[in-house]
Image (cartoon, rainbow, N blue to C red; front, side, top):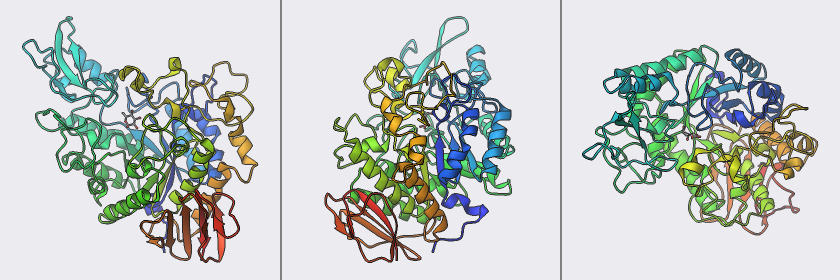
Length: 553
Ligand code: GLC
């Protein structure tokens, strides 16, 4: 039986809903989502039945990377609202029984942050440069970057500084866009500043923090070349092998953060966005004196194949269980193609993250059927889960956004070869027959910042609300059943299907079984005392292909 839920361990099995604030709901009619819009839609989230919200960055930002370029960590961007609005949101969410997590971006600031402006303005000997990673260039005149690192968004990870007198200076590191200079975490002032930022938000009642690029803060001494290592992929990379990802020294920083959180009475929880080479390396971030949870990207990237999913589930539970941490499960977020569209294609043997490597002919009906089954699988697994806004509506990736509306820096930085992540960030459809589908208030003139497909008129929250068979009502039923069923949430599972079967069947105590049919033909349901919930219509006592069921035993 799953351990009892208490306020102190809420994070062990919480279902946390990601709000990508620019695209959730627009309160002031400028076509961009904001805090006012989110406050108005809190009843949707409470009714959905999630436990907490994770808000993407809401700080003042030039938006070179959708707010992940933070200019001031202690304020709110005027496009989203004010600090008072943020406080009102937190208080109202709490009144609805929803906890609130914010996103903290410690690897880099915006190039418009006061620290970076000071570093540039101060000239070559300015101590303000010590907060960033600034190095002389290579070559006789220093006009080659200090090493061979490349940016995650494409192009080199270094940009040369132009000194106040106009002369070319040293280079600064940016593992992401040039507008996102990397901080130097060997600098004591940087460390103290982020602990102070955490307290600033915890003092305002924030229940937890998602840590952006948690695996990137520490770079190897001397900044050695990557050589043959990949700047993005970490598969199989072990201890200390990579010069800028998942270095052992990063853990000491998070032990300090944990101490900050623990000083607040009721549990404040961290979730790490950490990419690591193996499940064991990931588990190091969630050891008892460190962070509470970490996203499970191996699960997100798994194809819709029983064997692959089962292996990821087992490896995750084993590695995390060894350090006493709960697993988390996630299917989509603001950085990857929506899973309806990923599952709508022939499934690859290995991991899948973007759509470009896949067959272009999407069968969205198939993708949706699988997404419904995946929701029941995800919410039945031991631990917590992350939902991405719009997955409860069954939204698909918008693959045909016109090129002139694309905003993700990946599009420019890849030389227009990678369209980037805008297709999963299209504003949500709430109501009505045509854009903006209730995203912005009536009588608004500004269009949503990314255009919504006309076909989303059949996926609005309003349409789905009254349809018992809708994706929205499937999520509501699953979340409510999960909340009231003592077998679900934290705990363990026991497989009942054979390891090489195309059917996943597992038991949870007391008296619960989840069966997912990933084969291409119906299978007989095992003995049960009642069907609690099914992702599709059952065929008598048979479970159709790409369908999942929760059974009482
Ligand atoms: C994380 C965010 C992503 C952002 C990047 C740089 O991966 O999820 O959206 O672009 O960090 O901050």
